[in-house]
Image 1 (cartoon, rainbow over the protein chains, first blue to last red):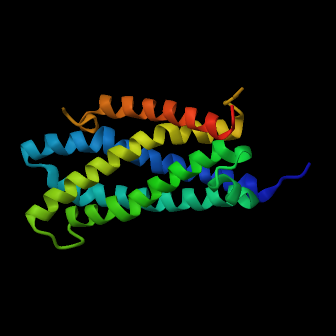
Image 2: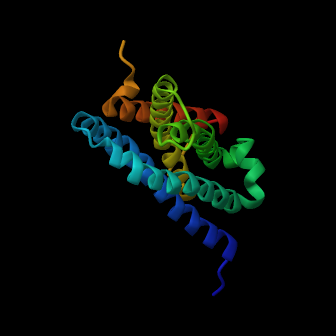
Image 3: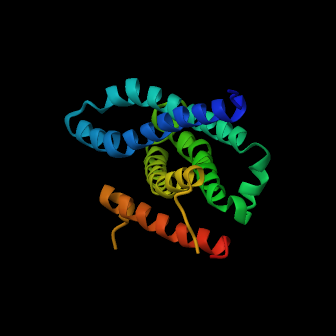
Length: 164
Length: 32
């Protein structure tokens, strides 16, 4: 018996990192947003922003990178076919595009906003308010995109879509 | 009109709609 190591290991890493990324995305959207709202009401939000959010954001943004890189390795020679949405790789290609847009949202929108909110970058209260809203909306957009992304990732690997 | 992203239910519904729309797009790409 032989194992094709690159796809076997890259798929494994892709799934591990992807679970961490989306787990933290859902944690932010389903748990932390509501928790912060309640905590702000009783004055305990500082602890969440100081001790929890920075750690969660660290694993969130880096697991996103690892997920994307392992996904690219898994596509291998079909990387171009997937991103060009060629019919043979259109299903996984749509999943790959959705994941890529989500990665860009994490690094170029959510993280720069969160840096202001957790105090890594100086910002006025007005700037923090805008950053909070932008990070919130784009994070919610990533939740929306994660639904079709997961559908197409699973469908791409397991032939769950039959057309015709 | 309220932004559907302001509620979890609205976000989940948008995710389901996006999946359906992209499914149709995939079918079109594959000529089905």
